[in-house]
Image (cartoon, rainbow, N blue to C red; front, side):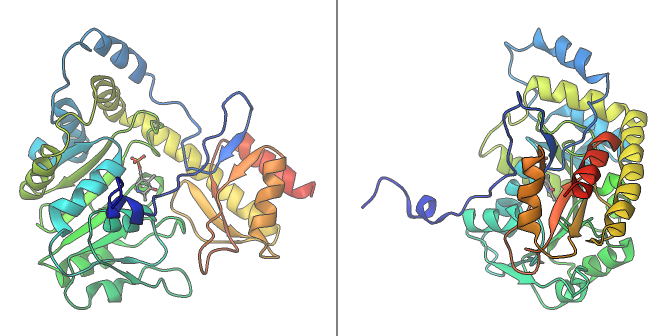
Length: 351
Ligand SMILES: *Cc1c(COP(=O)(O)O)cnc(C)c1O
């Protein structure tokens, strides 16, 4: 007998990238945060919401659902809001996968939190290997029954994206299960599947304000799909936590979503920085995958990613390494400002 449940004892939790002390001027390129501040509309919106803090927030985050619906040409009934997209992804497991007996299908190299949720919710997971060029195993996703497909587009940590026709192929091959498309990085250049929602009742598109909107600290993410999917998520949410998104987060998120011009402006700057930084790494012998995200996945010429990570750390620059098969010789480097990336290149040249 133990006070701790067998489940809690068995879990291997997700390990987020290091959040170092903020009193040291790190150049932080390890967790894909946006180097630019959020829209200037966010601060006054949050300040106004303070007066209403004695009251519980609106449980479905209606003002955020309205802002998402307006931005993507959907109805409020097609939008679900969560406390970061990790919250939304977690709720998807009991809403769509738990108790189906069949496994959820996902790539072997992708966002590692999916496996953590699968273990937490007792959902078996079937991994399909990326091909030698790190492309998504679309054919394997299509073959045979499963409880659902988890697809990250662009994928993390590779940054490679899929064309919409590939996603449609999965949607058509798996009409009886949920196809979840995690678009955490889609605003940095990939094609969104949002336009397919009206045609596919099995499509759920998940997004976050953490990367593209400079609001990782606010914790707001959302899902978009046909109303029955949104109702299933709402029913799970209301069986767990009625108020996952607080008043300040709702006010800030709605303001940020309404200022699309600002978001596009910041994303364009990051795309521009990514282009010259990728080229600069390649000129220095790195193998760099063609990223459509706000990071690059790069292999130094000698394959010693761990040594390079330690060297960069000694220069005050944090990047992410994954000690996993096939990718241990690479680093995931978030795209910061031009200044940040110049500092990294200078550190490489000084080595
Ligand atoms: C960062 C990330 C998330 C989590 O985003 P939050 O909204 O901050 O919880 C989800 N999926 C992928 C692929 C990510 O990279």
